[in-house]
Image 1 (cartoon, rainbow, N blue to C red):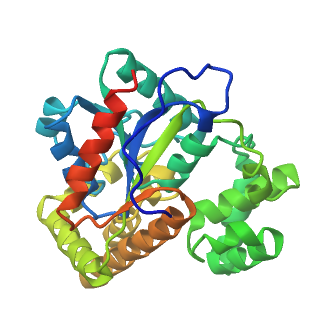
Image 2: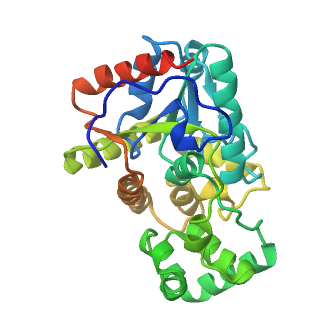
Length: 331
């Protein structure tokens, strides 16, 4: 990644048939690991600029997943318009392709109304697909997924990760050995297409918009880890386990669904199943959250160029404010 760049943005003379990188910047993306303060910073910026927030979060799209996803409160959403939140029931999957479609439409709608789109979140796959274009990946194949689930049950996800490393080393290198959802998807793509996901992603379609990324990268990892532990305890105090109990009580949800694979939810489900004790559940959820933050930071390094900011630095808000002011001049 690069350091801060000039606040001057291109003028508006770009035509619709030029490459995305030759067009004016359409929106700013504020990305960072979980717990880095993205939402608070975005709300502060929205108090000073004509901003509407577009969520870049694969868990906040689901209704009923509120506390564990740190979803904006009703008061915050009434104060600042938020988009791409509560789009789906927890039983319905939501894909990166759908995110690119929905986020692109939101960017255009917000700009058409003379306001500024600020994309905020930590689902880096979504961010990359929106900025760089989305590859033509196959639809889900339930039969292949069932086979992979059965194999993982028998051998464990690290064994499937090792197999993925022999078939698609580039994809395996960015996935944790227990990242079940993404390992499954990568092996599914290979089974259906015969090609590694990394090669298909390299042939992505041209993106619809030029986007600028501001990356929140904490300089002190220990501070982030302490913040994540405090935040999870605050979620527990706010009724996180009751939220998961309500999801379980529906009777139509399983921990294999994408929504419930979200960090925290799958550990809570195991605890409520009686598979682990409370202390083990809490420790596992905090450890998984730290691992998620580490993966997000790895993704961020691959999303260069970007403006890199320490979320604890006083200058972060001022610099982003200047970027939004520059964006506002590109009508």
